[in-house]
Image 1: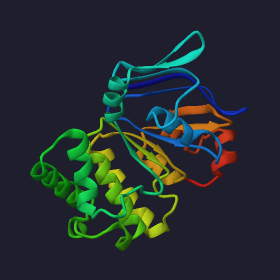
Image 2: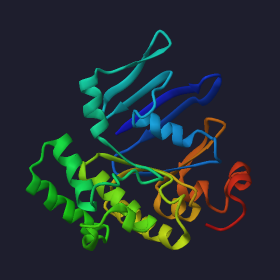
Image 3: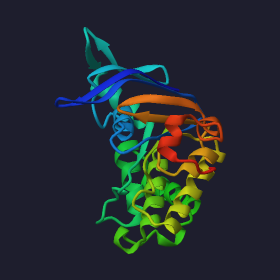
Length: 250
């Protein structure tokens, strides 16, 4: 479904990603964990073409987003990139909703502008998705009138409205208190039950162990561990994971 090989990325003189390789299969939920500055969010942004890489390759559904020629990244054409980026949905930690649009319009406008759907079709689908995330009664509200958890659930619905093949989350609960975190994680859990392909950058260890099929642990811009969630975060976890996540039973 998605193959990233030997990704390198630097900001100035700081190398953030060092030969990172990640493979994601259809229907798989992969959690990426690690300390702040480990490169996990940068990796996610590179996979979504929100950042460009210095070298390496990224293929989505067998189609190349970027390859390396003579040591330098070479991206596909703009038309091809638009199509590939539509296969990737992104949910940010700070929601990124349009504050001057109602909840419904936040879901409708991207469908109409990018996918060319009619207003009726877009509104009907938007209401179905708002029902899915438990916010049918908030369609006419504006983001400023919602809690953080509700805004994040709207952001998830908006991402789903574009029918992505892979749904990516960049620490979706980092700005939320425990109760609101539970609301958002419940929605992601349901998406996992539906076998949605998801990549989740998270600091929620219980969630990673219970919901993810695989856990990738990053440190210093490298993939240190990549394996089944119950192994990486289980009782036989490595010393590196113990140093990061502690001794608690997840």
